[in-house]
Image (tube, rainbow, N blue to C red; front, side, top):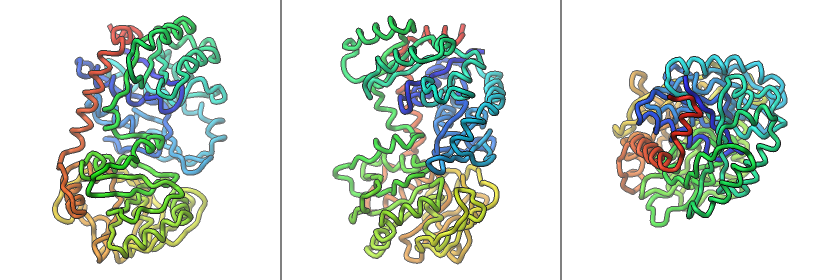
Length: 486
């Protein structure tokens, strides 16, 4: 078995994209490859073929490997619900909630789970590409670590450390990591990569040499800024800052409420690829644009808390005015629940127990209770446009509004609700716009034209493009030797 772990000098240095690109590169060269991330923290998740949930990045990496996603690819997932607490998902299933201090004290308990999942993947692959989380140089988190060096040491895993030159101080990041790491941890690092470079690569030759001399680690390459990464689904809310640019000349403007616990915002990515559509995430302190054609309430990991935030911003008033002007509203998952009359969380599933009035735009009530629904779905929209996606939610929604369903799910029938005026709708389904049919319906209803493409083809082409760039800029032969490939 061959394996290598890509760790980073911080969050958002490009670990997920580089692992995905390397997965596709090695698969295209005939190897059976599996992705793995011991512990992830993200509210962007995906449903697996074996009926669980994992971080969105690992689902993308499975796609890069051309293999179905499984819960073993991300055995520990933390889904933040507050500033200090998160839902704990182990091998795809919710096992409870933990605050940050409790998880830090107890995370070592999960090491055996992580090792067993890694061994499961190793048994079926020629190569396992492992992604770390955050940075191994966060010494305050080292005790009991299962995400970076704790896992690497337990699995006897060689490590490649990634520095992000786009954010600056990349020499200090890599050399500083070597300086502060425990010597035994530092010994696991076999090389480094510089990511997100712009300009003439020769201008950084001296910098690469300085890093190699000061760390003793092998220079594995300088990866340029990957434009194709912008066509991949994002996992972290950090990426939202890169998804808010206006598109001059677009005929349709879609405003998305950017709430603190926003989840699965990659649902909107297919719309962003449409030439006639501008998708804008509306930040706190900003009113809804009066000229928005559609306002989207996205998924949420803490529905009641995000609903309170929405009201604190005055967006409830803006939404009412938007509907009176003839504008449209779409709620997805938690956003769908917010559109109803009332939301109750009697058991404190997503935070402190409580209830609150909804926005009253759909004649529905939701109680957060029962088992979490995790399943892929297919179906069609009001005018027959096809969709494929997945359900990932806790909650039972009832009320007269269900008599006017928004969608039809294959094998299940009516789903979601649409108001009598036809301008407010909601559903529990993520990924509605991945296939071209329902997306075309929506865009045409808003007065524009859709390219009608299947978004999966865009993602697949982006993975191939990234793999080709990595083949030119990374020392793949050295990486193979580090991983133990013959």
